[in-house]
Length: 142
Image (cartoon, rainbow, N blue to C red; front, side, top):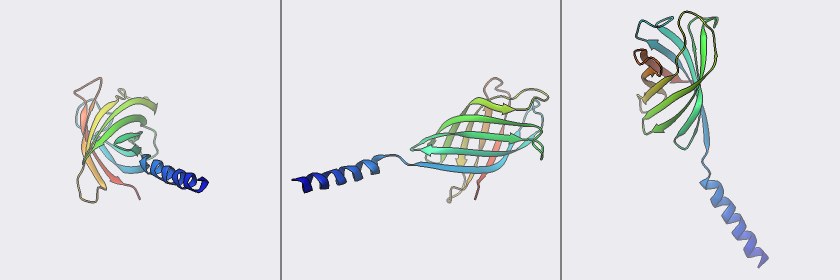
């Protein structure tokens, strides 16, 4: 009887561990363009990192204009992945320099553009100023 209970406990524990969703962390490097007249610059280097649990994403974007990071912003975001499409909503400015203009949180739509799923491209639009928009390109960091 004790042996049967032990076997059932082991099987149940194994099944429960298989049901738990695994977290996957990735980092992407690339650039973001801004295609309007509101920008400090029309191109920013960018690093995006997120944790994926199921189809839910939580992460941060970092954008920098200059090589020494004197003009930068870091955003928090949440999002979902649906097939080859990722939809992100930046929900907070975590850290930023203040220069000409101001930083806006954004809605971002990205698409995997190759079979290996190591390149993302897409577009963004600002929340507070829908006329502020641009494009993004990322490659999976090694």
